[in-house]
Image (cartoon, rainbow, N blue to C red):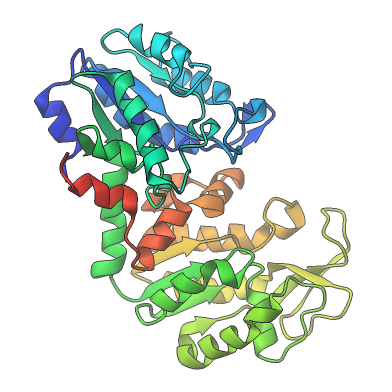
Length: 402
């Protein structure tokens, strides 16, 4: 696999370089509420620009259905990227993906400058299941950068997708792994090859079905698997407890029962939960035993005794991986479980990895110090698939050596 350093050693001055970044940031209107992914993309883009490359950034935002939608425009991202790059220069955004405006904007680049093309998912070929359609878009990307062009894959959050700007373009342009992708792979290798022990995994989120594959992959490898979030209630139901109006995947109860039987004492469930009479920040709340949730009440966070129990496990750990919030952290009454567990991870001497997605967002939204964690991933889904043992197409293609 060739890397960004290899490309820089070859020389990039005057060359157009297409960079696939992951800039899928949360927005409130035109305001970015968490610019973590833009900041994570910055080092690779800046290294190329500083070396004289003419950088063309491509990325997606949200889930448009293969056509332009104003609410998914990359305008706020281009603006923020320009601010972070500094120097007073704006990052121009082409109004299309590979069309006439994209050609004009990329042709106007000068050495050391950066431009962005519109949301790649505005083109239906990006996510097409038909290889020839994706390949056609990839060739048009290659035409944008022209003779001497190169491709840098730096969007770790999308390398588990076989999409035109991630996979197919690496087959038509000389392709290199960006610094962010390499850093993520290095961390995940540490988690999978020879993690320090005790190895403790914290899993949250709403559904067991979303995490089943990673639970089954990790259970044989970890010393403790701590379960919080909405998914814990299906496990509690599998133990025969009532869960009131809490989130429950009835079709997963038998699966959870099997996992509990196989896991022995490895799988640790909440001992208390914060329940509410409605899904609202203004609801009546109380803390109850996890085995005593009454009808008409729903569990929306883990309780303080569970935070303490989880913190004890985390304090003794040598390696920690966390993916998924412990409760509905966006609502203040149900944020303390996630905050408490995150603080316990940050306070632990362990090598600690926050597995992207909502967990990374929670760290920033709750005002926790990011330097308390060894690594905060930018790719929730990609991280989980790697830990499941799946091949990541956007990584595998980089080894084909175009």
